[in-house]
Image (cartoon, rainbow, N blue to C red; front, side):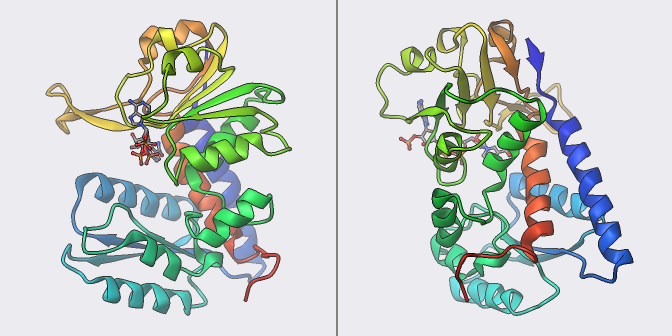
Length: 295
Ligand code: NAP
């Protein structure tokens, strides 16, 4: 078993980004700037946004955190997004999900200019990704591609099983693993809660990517000998031994599964740090991203 160290790869990418930003500063070019909108005080969202803001600072990028109370209206939020769309120095906009129930997340995502949609959630970016054209790729799937690339893990002709069909991880992951370039060229099976014979299907995977949010559901009977296992799941489970009162659990029972795998990501320290590194990359490339045709 070889452990995939997402933290180390993320730091490596952050160093490259910092180098590029220094070069931009020295050349008098604009400095990428990420604007994050946070609604309410959800513990998980606070942590994720704080980590994104801190990474901006680490790599030398500008950042702004815009907070709203949980009762904010959809109209007010969308008005803010439109204002940020019009500010030249803002190169990336993210609205931290989930949003309170009075706000339709699709309406908010649709309001973000696709060029500044560094989460890659806007349908224009989704469509361009499907076609393999330049776009913002959602941060978590892109982070997984970067890990596969970094460790030179062979993907061509492999059977990739993706567990979970969310818009932000499972669906884009399945598209990206089936594209005709590296990392990709896989034969992909996309599974979800209605899939029958789940362990049986997963056992045929050369590459198994789990994004379901069910702590340690993937046990050895899901894993083929020698498989590559990528664990996206991050669920907070109560743990009195931790200062925070909780521990982060992946979808994979790491200790039970690891000896069957050729490569495996841990939780924490696997996919999570790569999501942030990808977001930084998208924000860096935002200004120079050329869509095929969009005005
Ligand atoms: P999500 O929106 O929570 O959806 C979960 C998906 O898993 C759905 O497609 C669901 O099927 C499927 N599913 C649920 N239970 C299942 C079961 N027993 N068997 C098979 N499929 C099942 O997914 P998400 O937003 O992608 O999040 C998934 C996990 O990844 C969560 O733990 C989340 O915290 C984590 N995550 C981590 C990162 C990171 O940076 N590390 C980023 C994003 C998400 P149906 O469609 O049929 O309901």
